[in-house]
Amino acid sequence: MRGLVVALAVAAAGCCSPARLVKGDRDTPERAFDFVREAFAADSLPDQYDSFHVDFRERHGISYAKYSLARSLRPGLFEDAGRLLGKARLESMEPVAPVGTPAGPRLAMRMSLRTADGSAGVFLLVDEPRFLLVTDDVELPRKEGSVSGIDKAVKVKDGALEVVLRVPLGKASPVDGARILRFEVHHDWLLYAVESLEGLEALLDEAAAAAEETRPAEAPK
Image 1 (tube, rainbow, N blue to C red):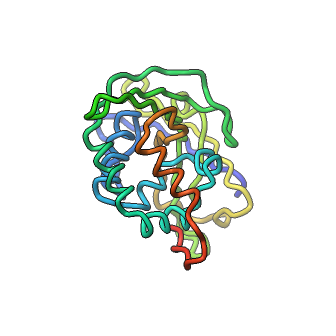
Image 2: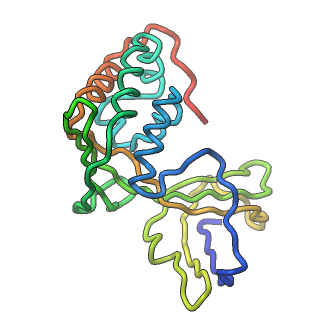
């Protein structure tokens, strides 16, 4: 199966969304900010790292192993970043020109913050819509990836929810005839750039410079 075509019309009143797999979401820039804030407050490295766009990780030279090692070497730096974000308030957001990513042009938002000491901070967030496909194929029960044009493909029209998507699955896809158990699609706003925020910049520099002599942590699945 090289592509997935989902076409459905469901009465809006009779539809309910499935329960989320994790607490919180990044469906909007505001929720993404809350998600990152909670990830640092809970000292959850997987959620912190997962909130970084792949381009952001590559630009800063941060792998999960390095990020995890930096946490073990300098836990105070992560605590400082958590306090910084925990007391920061969102001042404004403005859409900017779409950003080119490996998956194509993506919507972008510039987010301005104000920290407790009065310092300003600016983030750039990029939306990377995602899909999750769950099937009864025992060799490949789950398939995740990016989608584009979600706002045009998923909409409410005449009292019904319409979804028309074509999602290339590539070579690693469920076998033809596999039964679809669940399909989800959602926006996912990720940290693409830190234009200014001193405490977080220091954390990223430390993570990128983390020595690798120690056995690296296993990356999250």
